[in-house]
Amino acid sequence: MLQIGDSNRHVMIDAGLSPRRTRHALESGGGSHHTLSDVLLTHGDGDHLHAGWARAVSSWGFTLHVHERHAHRVERAGIPRDRVSTFEDGVNLGDGIRVDTALAPHDSHGTSALVLRYQEASLGWATDLGRVDADLRRFFAAAAPSVMAIESNYDPVMQRASDRPAFLIERIMGGAGHLSNEEALDAVEHISTACDLEHIVLLHRSEQCNCPRVIEALWRTRAPHLADRMSIASQSAPLGPVRIGATTGAAHPT
Image (cartoon, rainbow, N blue to C red; front, side, top):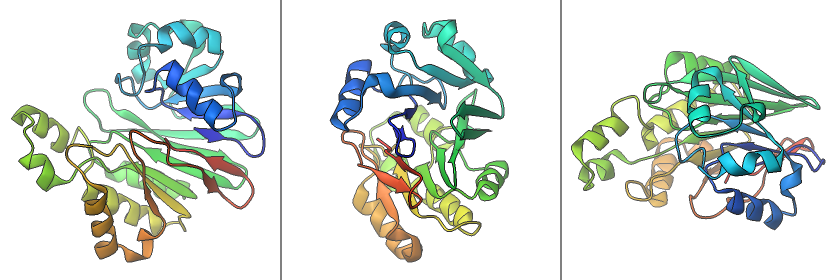
């Protein structure tokens, strides 16, 4: 969840929580569901677009922004057409908020990587990535975000040792599923050569095939210059506010 500047306007990335849980999260942070103006959808998987929004989106009143390649998934999910706006390269949300987008590898239809800009602050967002290819590296390096939020889904050793079926392990690790801890760190190190990252948030951590201690040890060993700026988001509890820039905005990755 993003609170824009000192205003009471909120922009949300993905809608994987139910409407009830989303309303509770907004209210616990001092907001209201009436302040949610826009939702940016990275892709249409069920853990990023909860089925409950098919009924609730009209009464909430926000606009759901989705890449044109994912529009059919949103339509099949029952989201009313008048609440959906499609994009290809970017979105202008008004009030000085601009979103640059790029498609990244994930399953058959990909996922949208995002850079949200407001005044001098910017937030990079990339989750559910099969891999970070050269185009995506260039996208984020050129954008030079102030804060980078990126998937760090699994530890390869824990993934291979899990009781998951072989086809699922192959899907996750095969270059079209999710990023390992090492792949996420490689990407952040590359992006950090082009900008001075204020903060790094690691997203979408597998509760079965990953562990915060493993992630922290990796970063302390391989990137001690970045480790103190890194936080690990949880699936079960909000991370808390991360302020982007000195005065321009606050991001609340949850």
